[in-house]
Image (tube, each protein chain N blue to C red):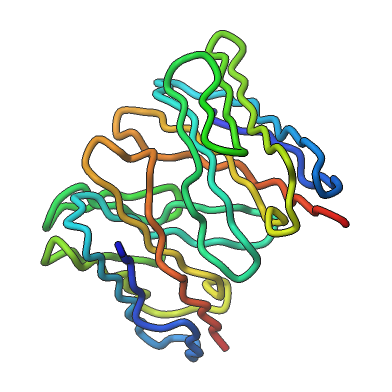
Length: 110
Length: 113
């Protein structure tokens, strides 16, 4: 079957760095996406990794290791507004559907 | 500013009613998707469409149908609403070949009584 695992909750303080891990089991893997969703809001796209390595976009970076079926989202210089749920999603299969993790709720405290 | 809009933010319906949820995108995207989101279950794909008049079942299509008569519009239909279809419904769209980068509407919170 196909599955993704990510921690359900993470807590950090303002200014800190936090890493949210995602491990997956899928067939026909194309890449790994990350989305952010604030309470009451819609998911918004953050990043996509198709190849191994680190992709950096401002304070956020995303990493992929295809051989380990593993990726992570790294959030630096945390701000209160980063408190949200973060979803990893794998693009896989013949029709390239997104398979979603259950989300990690990040709480950033003062 | 690119947009995906959904017809209602909140909807209350009775068991057995036929329910239409409309989604419109103004980005000329080929792909459109319907998800439902429930606490502890994440986002689950109901149906998707990669072209006008084309539709494919997602992971949980039972009790739902869809219609895509125009490129910009993707409708989700609950033929006979049931209480277990109470949920947040999210519509999304993406460019062809960019299924990894989806743009979401604000969602419709549907309550079936």
